[in-house]
Image (cartoon, rainbow, N blue to C red):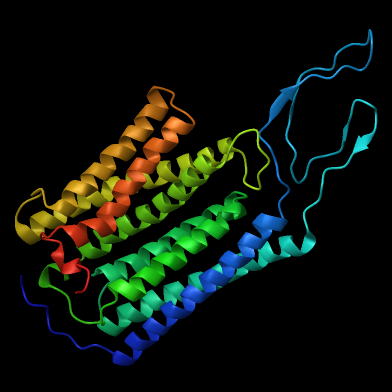
Length: 334
């Protein structure tokens, strides 16, 4: 394996980066607690929509079948006896906790970004050249995807799950993947790292959001009261995230092949990382194909997306633990 290229390292900035990541872990955990409080006490338990028919009385005309779902924001309805029923209201303090969770998530996001930037400035290169830096960047991308989607869609219910995923990911990186800031292999001194790896990071962040939705979809049970939204809502968010991220992942695979030709003289060599990147692409393509052409919806489609998500996680972390290859420069520290 070629020796790393010698370069100066700003130890002070490197230490600041490490401290920022530790603070970010705590902030993500604080945001998760706020989101969890809102999820537990600030959302009215709802059941899946059901179709019911009510009769006004003997000989009276039947009311048309309607979809009924209890949840925040519903207007009052009339029961069979003519009494007015007021839907239960969420606790105001819990709703405020959710708002605080969003604020903390943004602050943690800024800390995560600052940790990445200071690491990059300290070593004067793109800060995702090893497993530690890569996982830190993916956690940042996952939270970025959540916050960006939150601006357009009411998905605050995902906050607790995305932030705890980011906190666990950063904690794993700090405890088991951390390496001192330093030089990298000559093959990584290329503008392709800014193209290929950045695309993989962005796509992975969106795939994580979709994976969280798929897991919650399987946890959610139709017809039972739950603080989670309806399965259809979770499936819709997961599908949109995959639709956005799949072409980005496709571009990352193509860019990786172009970089491999520049660095190693061939576009494809069946390196373990290349194989599992392709396997991940194939399974996500199968999900989109089945949904678009065969009309697969619901549990079957979500299971396929979870299989693809498992392939993604194995490609990002497992390959570097269990296999050796041309990507071994990003291996887990011994």
